[in-house]
Length: 209
Ligand code: B16
Ligand code: MG
Image (cartoon, rainbow, N blue to C red; front, side, top):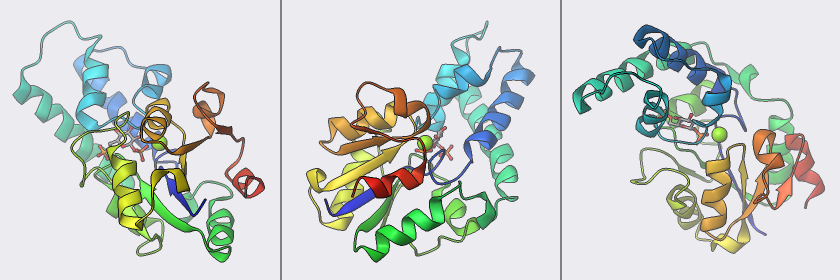
């Protein structure tokens, strides 16, 4: 194995709590029931697909224009919360794990559905740190489609079989497996049957190499 492709939200940084807060405001305003369990289904899923999941419980039909307005409003709220991010928001063990993998010569990439990836990486002090960044800005199909990871592997000039994908979402594990990658699962993805290597903490990656 030559590389690791990391999901961002929920793996390297706790932006998942900000996604939840922003969507919760939108759902409450619209009078739609939304909780943390439903929020788990939004992990790794694109902004518009996330909105569709929330609207499953809506009593009225939304036009495409209204949906776009809600997605924009959510993103504005989310971007506002991202202003608080600092390198201290890297999840526990992330800094040391990435440093050790670099030392051992592994290539490191990002494979995130988020179109806010550049601003998040910059806020947490990872501008220019990764060998490749594949995110919501360079894909047409969101996880569970493997496109975001395939693009990352392409940027690293490596075949999928030489790359691990590290994910917290079921959609992300499905995407990794569909693309022929080895899937490491953390959080909710650690108890998913399709995950190849379940881990409890990000530092456990160092026991796999
Ligand atoms: P944005 P990941 C994903 O990031 C989030 O898990 C998901 O909840 C979000 O809807 C998606 O990014 C799109 O984010 O609205 O910022 O473009 O887990 O793939 O790093
Ligand atoms: Mg994630």
